[in-house]
Length: 113
Length: 114
Image 1: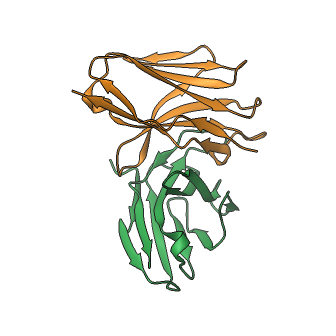
Image 2: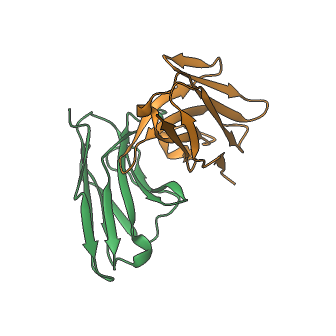
């Protein structure tokens, strides 16, 4: 019953530190996504991977990098965290190729001091 | 400019009442529409897709009005458990139609009161 699993659930960083958010899905989905959600801003797409081996920028990619490690896993890296990256991060997946329905992970709450 | 607009609320509604809220979208070429539900401090979950002919799932009814560019969600006989934020989601991609073209509204907060 796992679906989309994200780790860690909570993280506190100091400005300038780096970290990687991990995401894995067990639904054999082709496409995976990273969103951030901020109060009053709604969900915004950071990066996505339409299929294994490809990644593309979304609406707010600056300050982030991603890796589609294999079909199951899609990680998001903050190389030098900034307070503006304090947010809730959601990983999601979809069957891809025109499929619009997303399945989300439980979220990762990141605070950058 | 991508834009999906929702009334943020909160909508305070007594249990058992009917409540409806709309969502407007700016791109007339949009093809896919959805309502997601998000509970406090949880992830969004698909509530229902919105089809051109409208669709109903139990107490929930979704409608699409292409001429006026809005979708609506109607909840009948509201329950305490319906309290949540309802996100309007529109695919504004011109091609492909993959989920990378999805634009999320900021959500409408619904509170069902006993």
